[in-house]
Image 1 (spheres, one colour):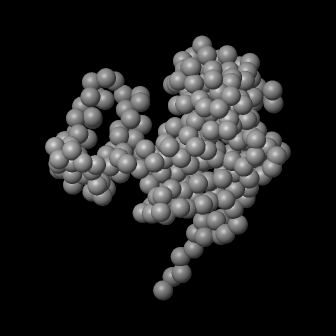
Image 2 (image 1 turned 180 degrees about the horizontal axis):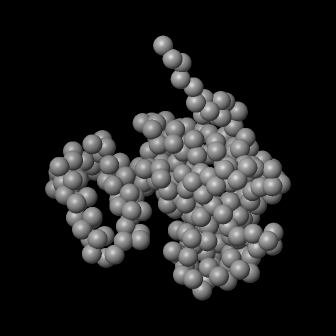
Image 3 (image 1 turned 180 degrees about the vertical axis):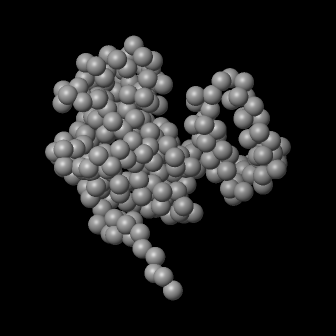
Length: 268
């Protein structure tokens, strides 16, 4: 019998610059960047982060994923020297790896404080929710290196804030504060720095209270229809709604509503 092997078997043996913590009781997984002081993200780390998101997506004990960092800065960006050493084939996978939070079917929260530059900003943009503080600084500084964002940053940002603001950020390598990011619709919530962890906990618990199957459906629908026409988006929304009508969770939600009690969703 042929013995099958895969690079992922060894890639996840020693995580590079981050750790994974799973709290089964709270149905929560934390991906924690910890390469002090600036949590620079290496080329190998990008591959590992993708695989970790894919693994957590398949883990039934996890309902919500949090991407956060140790220290005062989320991440100052990628390993600059690593770009010159990487092969063209590897570099071509940058955007695919960093898009892993968006492809993940479960809600993903980015908790951003301090510097959130380059790939740190790009992977946060690929998450569903971004919590920031008054210390947060977002930036895509690649123009200073004679480059452009290469992991989806300018494309995702333009969808959120439009071409004028995106050119201002990308072409001038301009930093924006957490408060400005919230005002522009880039960040979900802006809280005092000391309250970031508590705000993250609250959002995790809020998301856990909803039906897992309804949340997976909503995330995929919104992602898939971002570039669709209004007519197509409404049509797809109707199909998704119709499918959920036969779910156990929808029946439970309706019965709980009429029974004036909290629903007990099971994800089917």
